[in-house]
Length: 125
Image 1: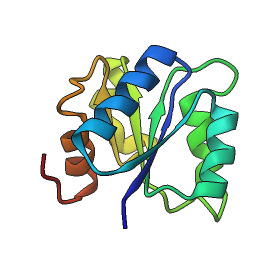
Image 2 (image 1 turned 90 degrees about the vertical axis):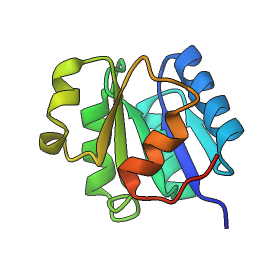
Image 3 (image 1 turned 60 degrees about the vertical axis):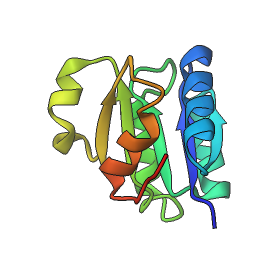
């Protein structure tokens, strides 16, 4: 069965690049959401195996989204990887509750291997 990964990012370009990169370099099924609220709803229904979450979003930022995901029994166990341009968050992922952090801009060709490495998934190009 294919792994399913949800990308939650309000920036269309970043979300699309990440989705295409993961689809082209892995056999994972990629789901995408353009807002925190949409992402939470999608995670509750689809139950992905991992979530890539933008830290800086309007309305509901990444930390608020993660708090809601962790508070819901349907999504609490899903590992979350933060996508951020904020260097401070990248240096201190342990305090966030996230499984890991990937710094933007990321290398699209390395994204699947970074995700797999953080989550301990086997990965081959």
